[in-house]
Image 1 (cartoon, rainbow, N blue to C red):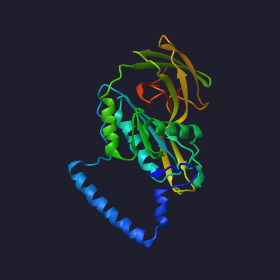
Image 2: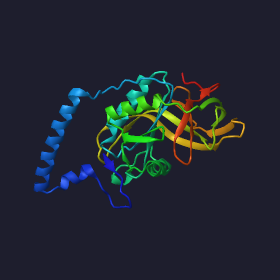
Image 3: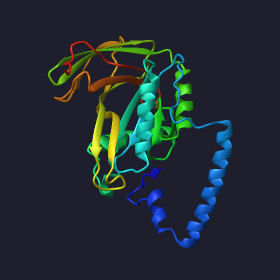
Image 4: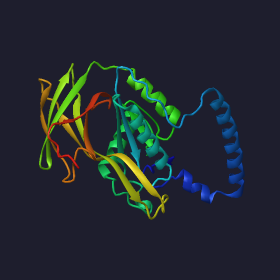
Length: 282
């Protein structure tokens, strides 16, 4: 796990191990052995599945992973969440991967990273009174865990799917050039909730040449290329315009929308945009 520096002073758990003094290393090894024994004992009663089952209730699970190509701990989380997305099938599980930019200075610039993604993670840090690190997974804007922890991820999804908010949203999209016209309709009392819409690239592969993942080929899923924030009309329905890339097509991209409370970060409803006339890729 990589902790994000609070104000320019870097704190890297993995990297600092390289510079530990011998005495510290001995202590670390002893502690690691103790942790290994403890984990082994725990796993006898609660095994850690590599492929967590997704059990559906009546709620939704919006999984926002904050990740980076410059973080050696992140590929495991990327792979786990990609599997969760696939295993969910038609269940209301929505995976969004935000590539942050604060690790770009470590020798490799993540081509999918953006400052806005990092700012969204910092906002969650404020909502949840939590540290900022990668890979960090935020579930329904209400709880967070390490994105590569299969047991914690499974439990968080289970809890999310078994909570209901009384809200629902439907989204219909019509593409016109590089603009998506999205008709929305909200059922229930939206209150101060806002409509957020993300343009998502389903898959990508990167050849990382430098940094902690130097020499590795990384597979990415559900990459948030851009996201937008809209006010919901008083009558709970309307149309918003969402810019999409020139390469946008129904096979390789999708648009996901959700209702989020701006004061608390809680997400109350989510769905995929039904694309009526989006260009197909053959």
